[in-house]
Image 1: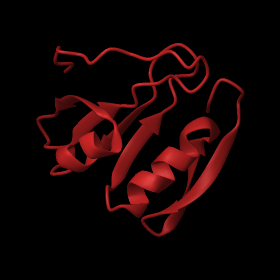
Image 2 (image 1 turned 90 degrees about the vertical axis):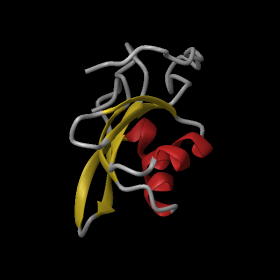
Image 3 (image 1 turned 60 degrees about the horizontal axis):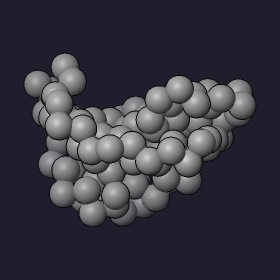
Image 4 (image 1 turned 45 degrees about the vertical axis):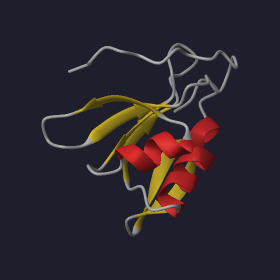
Length: 99
């Protein structure tokens, strides 16, 4: 849940899934343009909003404005949205790999 303890439900992969309300529209948009999301978190006011997507989506994620954090060993991609949905803080592009 997001900082305000609110979440929205999105119909993804044939079932309703709870998504942090403050990023639900972003997750909806990603799925709408064909980027299958596996997981996400808004950062809860402490960190950056992030998303995990299936492999092969790196270019589309970058076109959407996401910054790639790492391509995991399982091939899935972790990325973050460069603006905190609560504070409006813009995060710099990370040059590190998170495992």
